[in-house]
Length: 403
Image (cartoon, rainbow, N blue to C red):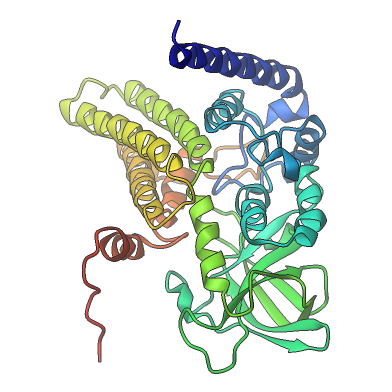
């Protein structure tokens, strides 16, 4: 047997052992109140069973299932990309509760590992690993959504601290987070990408106010966050002062990395539910319906292949925008398809008691339809993604700026 073949066989055996380990642990732990959630708590549904999901996060931490892809030197397991995919697949198929600290584990932690100081890693990675500290993202502002370079939130050095003033918006789960990573302007008179810094700010201080933004899904996980002379130590800056744009873009690359594969397993379940709706409505054999379902299936496979390809290229670059554009548009279209198949009944807000939510709760299909309208906006709108792909991936000239 050649060395190459021998290595492949060993790798396959290792992965299968890892899959069996994940399946066994999930089967013995997704029980009791954790099992009652049946995987709920995802986008548009974040308020469901939140306290149960916080306890679940700490259960994962005790068993070492948080940060499994991080290097062992930083408290992770150092698992391969293949094994991270396996964990994401088995986690979703076990209908384990939706996670409460995606921002910490998948965005902030890889950013600290790549750009942070050892002191910052020592301070923050353990709290993410054991599920006791949650993070939110302070990027967007009322006048700086997809145009993040238009940030106006200011941070000024004062003695041994940064003093922040400004407003952030769409800070998901800010009202239940302990820390926020904030993009703020630290160089007076700077414009656009220059003069920004990436700061770590404690939420538990009187100078930070969060206000829930109620959405059309009925949920309130989005927030407005106001900083009025909020403070954080000078060493709570990731990277050099004024170079926060590169750190912020690096974090967005991590957002479109391995975590998208877990998301896609959830998409598989939603697609299966859509097929079941077509059967229940008696339209599964309609040629137009079948064409739309097949288009959804094909799109999901393309997303997976694109994600796998991009993960083999090292640090995420502007090519990550391809994946965001793909899944945002695909998920919005799936929500529309699900409601189209239900016809008039899908549009009616009928009394549909939810044992985990209020009695006037929308159906999960309606929540999906309404929430996916935002998929093509948050994390960078489709228009912004196309500009990034055109200019930074394909090398096309920039669009003319209005005078």
